[in-house]
Length: 93
Image (cartoon, rainbow, N blue to C red; front, side):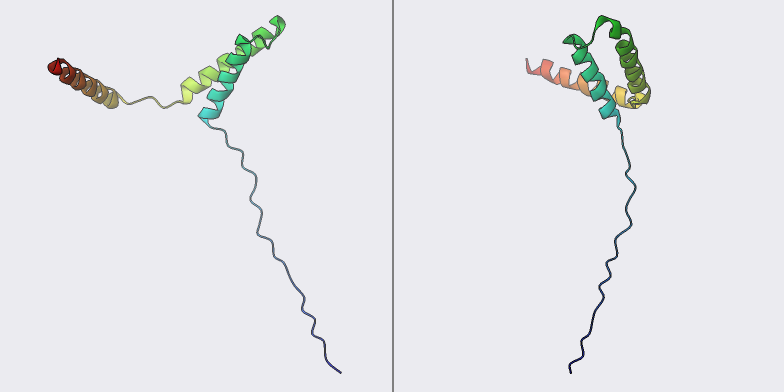
């Protein structure tokens, strides 16, 4: 009589990561652009225009408030670069 060995297989699942929803400034800009385009194409009724416009204005305000502004030093460097490239072009003529 042959002995039968039974092997029990255990499957261990990795812990599931929670679904993290991410929303970037670029996503919000895209949403504002979609609303603007839909409005231009007449997708909304006149009675809805006020609500759509208010939502659009909130998105734009949020975008402006959360978009990093260039530092003053960066602006000065950009102006110097633009000035030197203009001077180079003037000297070529």
